[in-house]
Length: 406
Length: 138
Image (cartoon, chains in turn purple, orange):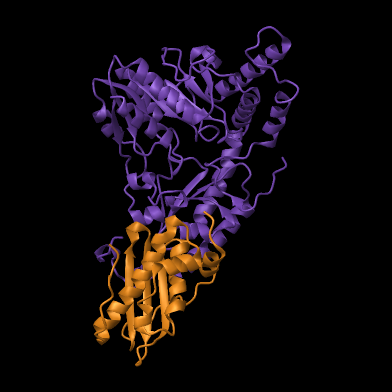
């Protein structure tokens, strides 16, 4: 496989992935020669597009072991989360008005929940355990007689931990609660078997799995049947659940990306795990370094580390040879530290000092060795500049200091 | 976020990083900010018998703009009298470094660090000049 070289070194695969060249190649004819509308029933342009869409649907279904009829195309995981949560809440509102989720969910889930609260629904936001995983006892205790929907992500985007969705599914099914799972960060990274786990709705994205941006899917269980109220109205595409002309080329891309993921994920994940462990080994003997989130129940692609006494944005600035994410949201518009790390109970300093490394298909050992060398050097330099590091080295307990808040 | 060339220069080649011994003659220390807010600045000045700042050192925990702001003020205070240094305004720092609006707080913190160091100097060595108009930020 020819891998395009990227500079700076790309270690932000959880933000997005490059489209695999094999996927891009397969998409192109569906933009130019085979441009038909899959909904056109009266000529071969439409028929061939429809066939391509259905083949891609089969590929998405195969990766997660469900029936292709249970897959609905959307524009991405955000839309899938909206359709699943609002659609189920609206359909089942006569049964109850309570929903449960976790504080470390993606904003696409959290903000959808907030919208439902404005509509009069009630939502419980559960704290994770300090390792990032859901506490099943706390979850059971949060269930009310009027709970209608539960939404828990499979793989967390910031810390990569894998939630116990099989156990949650059993609990929900026994109580007749609809269970939605955001699996945007999970496809190609963990095995998903929808014939086994009792999940009712599952959101997927193509661009986290080497497919194109702008396309996703929602799994909607048929046995037992789950009903949704459509959020997008129009020509009645996707059995009325999501109107809008299907983007054939995007769908073909997602199908091919998920086919490659199914065939290659076992070998790829082992290779990536080896690289991630090499990265961890290169950093963990440094002083005052903390791994965020459980290491065992975690995808091999993710390492989220806090470098105490160094501020995240300056760290990122000092590592312009690397494309990584910081838990200090100074890099975006607000000055808030990561809400995910705060929910784990990390203090603001450690949340501000965190870096998320996410590895992927085109990461090499050379990339990792270079990264380790660079980080050790830059952390050393920034700590030499840090008054907090100096105080720590002088044996001063930073919690005992009276800071002037500003 | 795009940084100005001056911020990048100070970040990559910070001036006067380090610490003086606190008991050294003429040394005064200002520490402002809080770890929870994402920035802490420590500014030290060394003042000679004539009330002139001979030398300065800083250490900063914070973003690139915070590091650049503190590095810049160590350059600016050198050679100034304590009273002159007390007149440095955050707007001058922000202008020199071309800080964007979200980073103005870094320049305010740097001004506060100067004021805190001068307050410490006056506490230690007298010099009953007018107290700086505000000691720490709100």
